[in-house]
Amino acid sequence: MADKGCVSTLAHSMMTAARSADSGVAGAGELDRYPYPDAPGAERPGPAPSWEGVEPDLSRVGRRAGGSRGRGLHGQLVQQLGQMIVSGDLGADRPLVPEEIGQRFEVSRTVVRESLRVLEAKGLVSARPNVGTRVRPVSDWNLLDPDIIEWRAFGPQRDEQRRELQELRWTIEPLAARLAAGHGREDVQQRLADMAEIMAHAAAQGDALTCTRADSEFHTLLLQVAGNKMLEHLSGIVSSALHVSGGSITGCERSGDAAVGLHHRIVDALAEGDGGTAEEAMRELLSVPSARPSSAGAGAAGSSGAAGSSDHVVPAPREH
Image 1 (cartoon, rainbow, N blue to C red):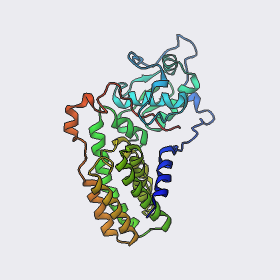
Image 2: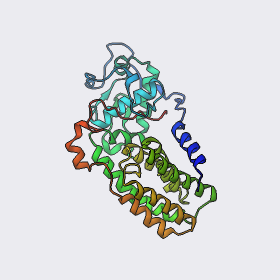
Image 3: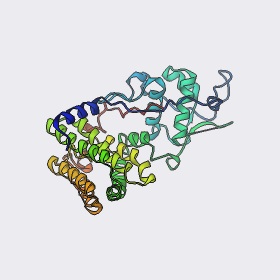
Image 4: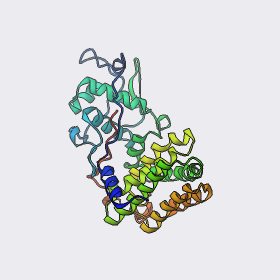
């Protein structure tokens, strides 16, 4: 078990760690897929969406307690447009005219085109010759994309998204815990123990941010060491589930002693190669009642909750 000095150092690292990101530089010829009209009077495909009420100052987009994860105008525009699409403000088959987007948000053509490229990769929009760029129906979205998960979780589909994420976790995490018992390494075992200790220390100090980050790393690492590449691929989804939950489905806002104890129980079972106990402990952990009100109760108080507050802005996307 990690000593208090190590825990303190690791906790500090958890607070200051930066999220890695792709560079997102557009490939040759890609920007031309979202052409601007050759002239101001050029024909446009269908009625343009209304931008009334949309925040034009991108510097305010994606701000939350933990700080914006978006970097630069490109990431912020992806955030704004993605949020509008996922929330239904820009419905399916609505045309998106790059020129008008650029004018509304006061950004360059390159920023608009690269932002639309990112949204197309997520399945939110499509760009076709003679048709233009249009919003795609929900059935075409990449619902496992971490950004879309977060946008849905902080929008009108909040309760549905969180329920679906919890059901997904119930399906994959107990299995991952069982499999991880047969693939343990000493360094991974120590790291899992460190995360459990950090959670206990942070929860006792009321440090929800550090606690949630440690919890996220714990569950993500468990999926990564299960010895199954497909489960490993889902680790980012679990991380997003913990992030958007704000702690409501983690050990950070549940019955603290019970949740932290179950994390330690999982660590001990993995060390002993006891997959059955690890799986059982994970199921118990996912069943520990949350300290927060239920979705039904939260709905009644939605005007003061995270999703209902008029000042709340969903997290900005990762840099693309």
